[in-house]
Amino acid sequence: MLDGHRFICPVAGTCCESDRNLYWTDPPFPSGVGLGLGNSLPCFSSSCRSGRHIRLPSSFDRMEFAELIKTPRVDGVVLHRPFMPTVEGTLCLTGHHLILSSRQDNTEELWLLHSNIDSIEKRFVGSLGTIIVKCKDLRIIQLDIPGMEECLNIASSIEALSTLDSVSLMYPFFYRPMFEVVEDGWNMFLPEEAFKEIEFLTDEWRLSGVNKDFTVCPSYPQLVTVPRSIDDDTLRKVATFRHGGRFPVLSYYHKKNGMVMMRAGQPLTGTNGRRCKEDEKLINTTLRAGKRGYIIDTRAVNVAQQAKARGGGFEQEASYPQWRRIHKAIERSSILQESLIKLVEACNDQSQSMDRWLSKLEASNWQTHVKEILTTACLAAQCIDREGASVLVHGTEGTDSTLQVTSLAQIILDPSCRTMRGFQSLVEREWLQAGHPFQQRCAQSAYSNSKARSEAPVFLLFLDCVWQVLRQFPCSFQFNEHFLVVLFEHAYASQFGTFLGNNAAERLKLKLPQKTVSLWSWINRSQEMDHFLNPLYEPNNLVIWPSVAPQSLLLWEGVFLRWNRSSKYLDEAYDEMVHIIEYNKELQSKVNALRRQLAQLETGDGLLETP
Picture (cartoon, helix red, strand yellow):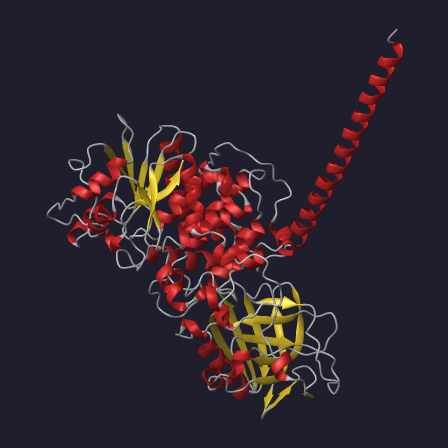
């Protein structure tokens, strides 16, 4: 692919003498999470006999990558993928992509981001080497590479390129979109815009800039919504009493009755039962006269008790007499990661009997976690909507299970969160700006051989819960399952900068809005939006109450089984459903037109009969 200062066409092997400054740009693909493309990009050199060419990322010239790529190109590589024909072609490695291109007509090529690779395995039979590539999107592909040395070099390069330490070397910093950015996603869901809606409904809250330099709370955004009667000095004192400085902030305002949901980190009561008058004042300010509130602690009672020995704890009833504390155990991140690994292992095991397979599925406890999170979210929503009480949600840090509960409760309560824009705003507000550590949690998926550190499928579990609700209320969501799958993919590996970093402070330091493209900029293009819209959608302004009974919660096949079984028949059924819906709309339009004609005729007859 690289020969001195010349670029070699990876298909034909002939020299492409195009102007690199003009044409060597990043691949212009709207979905870079290991995608296949039907057509290569054209070679702009008349001397290239293949008529096809793959553009090289500009990052390839950087020494950081050149030193890591021992063998940039291998011919005669055979690619095996689930439910797709075997492809033989040329394997190329660039700074950010593993590419396999074939001379065969009508074959999809492979473009796989190195950041999407979770682990690899090497096997050898004689001089033929095989690399099993296991991806963070749970796909497994196989590359048969002629030559032991070439195979070892490719494997070594993939391992190095898929585990880059520096965030600034990741693909979003080199990606340049070929589509026109009509709406800048970085400016679509700012805290100021979200606050305007609340300001229109009530004057009891204000937007505070107390965290403008991120010193009060490193994981909060610069602007947060707090009670109007609480000044910034009080907020600073409360921050010293809450884990990570995460003082209580507004998460949701319920239009129906004015009740609110707040989120925070655990109180630092410790074994001495430390109090903070400012904290008590802040959360009591949110209560109406004569009303009680609910504190939903996402930890089991014993876990919360143990936290006191480490300086944490929970709100003592004597200090918060107007609040009732409820413990709802949602497992911590390390347990969730183990659960995902067991689940994926069970889904990939095709050799077991049905009883054995179901037993392994149950042993993973994944569905149990889904049930726990949904149950807690329903409880929070019930307190707000049916009991007319305000709610404070927290666990330990307030960046994982807390956000699962607050965001799901809003989907249950607020119909706007079930629209395309509303859901994006929810993810931005309750996950990205709220400080969920995506960089840490999504560093590994289910196949990694490295020991888990901070990795956990917290966001994937949230998306799974959303899918469960969508499946139970298929007409109440403007978006479809595909949209949720795309968010899962991009959270783990993407050409967009949206999910880079662990909080707003890190994203500002990395200058992501200036140096990368937002995922929302791509999703909200009209050409892409159509792929994510639910054809069954009918706006529903009611609160929706999902069932959490075991028989109501299913395995999310669209994520966990999509590489294990063909989706051909499901796709055909979906296409037929869309066709029926469109045909029904046409018939309804004709009926309405006939009714109008009939009304006009009846009116005309009435005029003729009038003396």
